[in-house]
Length: 219
Image (cartoon, rainbow, N blue to C red; front, top):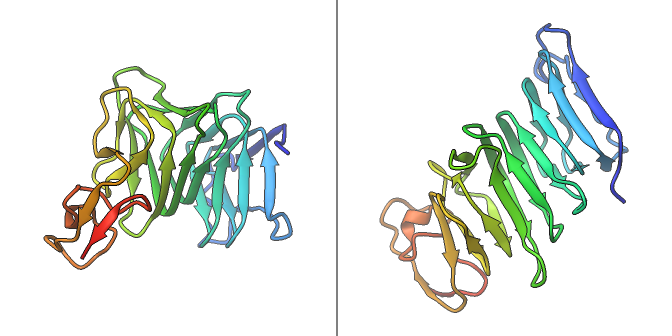
């Protein structure tokens, strides 16, 4: 179930990092921790380990440091609450699979995804992604190796440059989006290898995005 309360990580301005051994670590036994809000500030450092999941129903505010181990995922939950995301954060995995969920991102801040991106509403209710400041872009940087599963989202004011294009199926382009591809089922996506040999590089494909399960793929 969705959790409550606030996880506050505050190091009173003193330097903290995983490398230096000064960080707030989520215990390994807590593989699927659910919390209401996460606030990281004053040189604090929050770390979750390999394969751990951190479920957040409300605010994510990172003005200091966050470290996610390999296979870790931050998941936004609770459709009854709008999640507001502040600061620049690098996630190994980022997910929202709660239909009807609203997530608002701080303008000009970057959310960098290294391994997996899952944004999935359903046929009855999209996930709504917005900037806190209308007409000023929130930034999403997706690495070429990221496994994408994006469908049933309503997106506005998102700049996904300079990463690989985000391919969204059955989704709504509400305007002012860059490097998003709102895909159509059953298209043919042909490999060109124009840029390099990286499968996840969107510029290597004729549709300007990586293949989706619904595509006919030609290599």
